[in-house]
Image 1 (cartoon, helix red, strand yellow):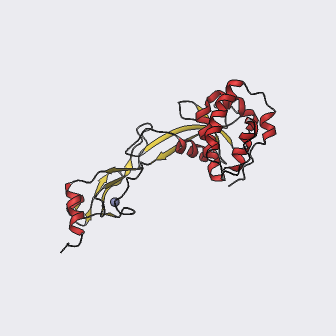
Image 2 (tube, protein in one colour):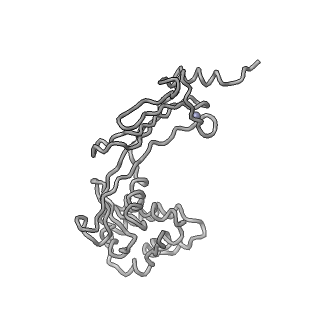
Image 3 (cartoon, helix red, strand yellow):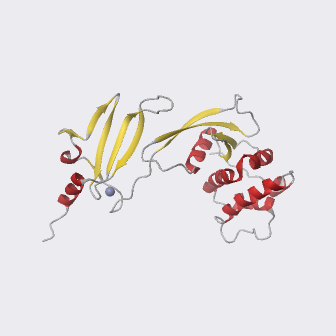
Length: 243
Ligand SMILES: [Zn+2]
């Protein structure tokens, strides 16, 4: 992975940034400051210093995420004004059709991942696919430099009652053929139904899912279903007798 060089406080300070943009940015930076270690020298820093300090002090793994969040909060205008200041090989615009945001990442593909994984998407109970256009800061979105990427977002696994889930396929609960319980053919793939032996929650994996936006087939999709009477009875049957 390429080493990312962050803008110096001087480079940020040297540019004309409007008062309104400063307000937006100060708000975003304020949110970022809360993630800094207490030892970071930000007390007397002006806004420009704060941006540099925030980026320098955040753990590397958090920088791209932090900038993406700041971009969400600061809005397009702020980043269009700041854009020229922080243009570099690792700065990207990412647009999912709702507006473009600035993201720091070594590659366009990673910028797409950072963007989608930083978003506040509505709760979703099954896999979704996000389509974004990524292009370098300072270039045109329609240029040869633009790339289209699809990022897969699986639903968050529900918590188990006892450590990590242990997925099983007891025939009496998941059904299907005795020799291959819980597995059904689906197009060129299969749908696999499993149940956790601790909590009775179901996991359904479709290896032939279709992206409704593009029609692409053969994708992996996951969803979870709550425990039901059948799975709870099976879980109870596995427990040692009390007496
Ligand atoms: Zn479980």
